[in-house]
Length: 229
Image 1 (cartoon, helix red, strand yellow):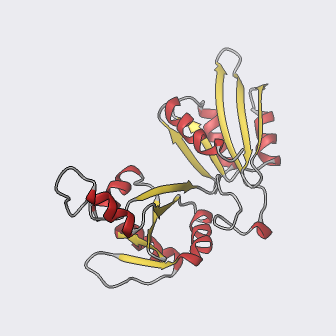
Image 2: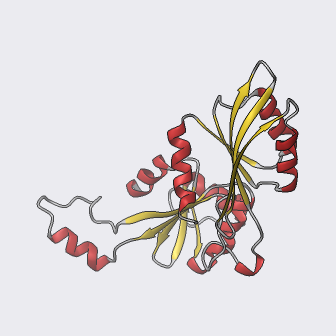
């Protein structure tokens, strides 16, 4: 389980779909989510453990995404034969932790970054899913704000970005989110005014919101989105 915990420590707020042979398996707290949200059953073992055949990935991943979860798809990146060859070339004595096939996080998906392909969703059911990023510069003397916004239609990988100065009631921002309601919003912690936070919370009640502590982390999030273009 060391391999699983190493990955979970880096993606603690994410449900790990952990590939083992022809199955995706969920462990510990992720297994509980799988049982409660997906209706799958616990497998035998000392720790909480559930799973499903790889062919069901799209259905189960989409279900969790629609419920607001983040999902990471972890694939085996070497075969048992490749693992044995790797062990033979090691300059030290192999430990039990070395004698495990390598796995990597291949994709992390949220409701706002879901694409529609043979893995991530049924293309016949594709609809516009807008991911919205907002940056604000407040003019305290006038009570107005200048907004930088970026909409990403992740279903087709299309970007819409612009900057505008709004009135004290944020009328243009209100109109924007009314016409193009996002499924996920990205904000930088401490950079949005109280009125903007209230507007978003009151008008996008059921929308997933992610708040980041630094601009570096925001850029990290956009790095995932960049691959969609």
